Image 1 (cartoon, helix red, strand yellow):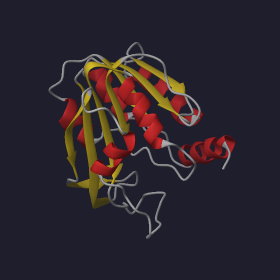
Image 2: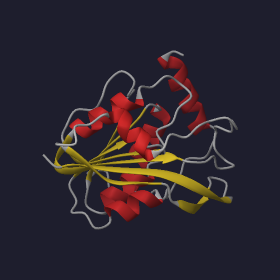
Image 3: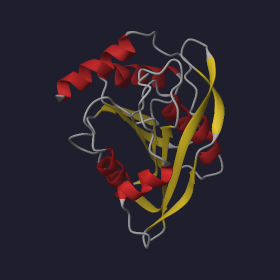
Length: 208
C-alpha cells in the first residue's frame, strides 16, 4: 500500500478521537527509564505523546516522530500547554522511507505496529545505530490484542522479543540484550475500559 494511504489511515485514527489533554506514559517506559540519568531521547511513533511528555518532565530532551501530522500537531500544542515546548521537538516522519538524524541516549518504540508495509527490523536497526555508547533501545510490542485495538484479526501472530532481536541482527560485540520477556498487566483503553494484556519487551544497550 502507498505511503499516502498510511498517512491518511493514521490521520483518521487520531481525528476520530478527541485530542488527549493528559496522556499517560506507557508502563514499560516508566519502569525501565525511571532510574536512568536524563539525556537525549527519540520516541518512534509518538502517538498521543504520553511517552514524550513524561520523558521531558523527567528532564530528557525529546525528539518525537509520527507518520500522522495530526498526532504531531497535537503533541506540539500539548507540550507547549504543559510548559515543555523547549524539551519536546515533534516532527512528522515516515519511517518507511527515512530515519531521524542524531545521536541518542534512549530510543523507544512502543507498539510500532501498522497494517502497511514497514521494514521494522531496518527501522530498529537504525535506532540501535543511533545510540550513543551506553544508550538503550526499548522496544515494546503487543503480545495480545486489547478490546480497543485497531487490529482485531484473530489470526495475527505476535513475534517474541527474541525473534525481534534476531531480526534486528545486531553484533553482540557492540549491543547487548538486557531484557527480553513477556510480562502481563492490566491496561486502560482510550474509552476507559480495562483489560489484561501481554507486552513483548526488548531492551538493548550499546556497549561498545
